[in-house]
Length: 376
Image (cartoon, rainbow, N blue to C red; front, side, top):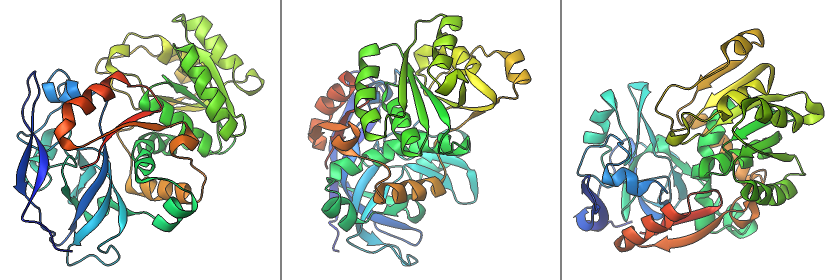
């Protein structure tokens, strides 16, 4: 495929308000060994994007750069060492880029880099998916079965983008070894990642207790997702009282015996919330918990109970490559639903020139089920 000399990209030049974002004509990347160039078809717009790009939410970035998110793309050119990926393939591009000489170091392509990872963002992997073309490592590009997904299952390209959201809770749920028949507490459950965690846990065969403060949203999720996944879902409205919430969570589990696992997606503002303590107290002995949220402070945990019940708590940042391969296989097998079949709707698809409109709409629809995308 012949690539143009230049292409359009959204460039963030500095952190300030109003946003210092502009569409610019930039050189089109060229594929070299170890990477490929893809044509971006659809990519996420984060609900917190305005806060990041203004500097209000201090994500470490090397500026100027082209921001980015997970994307669905078409392969345009491949490096000389690619053995299976070929031009024209429909693919998913993952933003979780790991250093090849030290996989413990990673960046979120076009979004986040700290410490030694800053070298990756400052150089080879500076520019993300908010562009017509994107260069990505071969190991971050995942072929999709276009015949099965779009022809047989009827998903649109926009629908497929939800896989990139599901990757995150799947990483945490896999790490705490959630199995079919387990009971998983998800809290808060009505946000973008929390709602995706509910979907993912149900698709993995678990029973889910979805907890949060917005009762109407919880009931809407239960009505939809419970119907899709055989009624294996209950909801709990959290009231902010540790004992009362713990009792309600335990009562929502099968036979009132407690849950096997808890996955947390708390936003930064929830550092003083009591729900983490309640959810941990609602676990069975030998239960597991994964912390995957955005809290930037210390939180209170029930130390004696965790010790006496042998509960394991772990943090999890993103996911591993093997999890993405497994998730794609589950979607292609029909085990994980996407799009309207999963209660997810793309409410806005924008070109790069309408970035501010896209960011405004995403910010106003931060909960589960409403997606805003760029279609460069």
